[in-house]
Image (cartoon, rainbow, N blue to C red; front, side, top):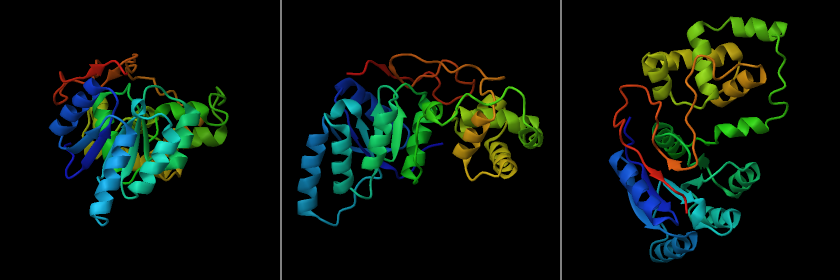
Length: 261
């Protein structure tokens, strides 16, 4: 899926990572405008633009690498005030719950850990650009009573879970992992249209409103996300490569692995 008409700006203190992201986004249909090495540079530039043309709209997306800010909450709040219509995404080196909460309170729309596969990264940006909030899967670990679900199914839970077909259960496990429809389709060897049918059925049977609520329900009721799925590759680098990417992915050999500044 190629993004269409999604314009973006980038703030990143690592010049090598900045150039790599410019190439990746440009090749996948995003229209990348100006790039900056620090939030202060963007704030100064946007102030000049606003003074010259107060009605000029902002970009659809603003990607802010955590390396480009000294006070992330203050900078995000300033960027939100300066560009109220722009969707702001923070690119973080590691997951920190308190930081995530503070940046969302300051006005961020997405919090993405840079140790992420290529397709989920692009899909996350598209979701943010279209009005969704994007959080890392690690946030589930901070939910109340996470991991304390009983080993044996409770009667109500058993009745609901047994109403799911085998494919719906497999799809639900993928939702826990945060996979977009394209990745689920590749992993289960089905079409994206079929994935959408399964997701709608899951939402209806679990009586939840969206994919995130379905994933939370599954985690709180002891559904094992790794059952029948390949483990996700991890590392300590800024990586858009996916060693376990299913066969048939476009540009499967394209990747970026950069040490964060």
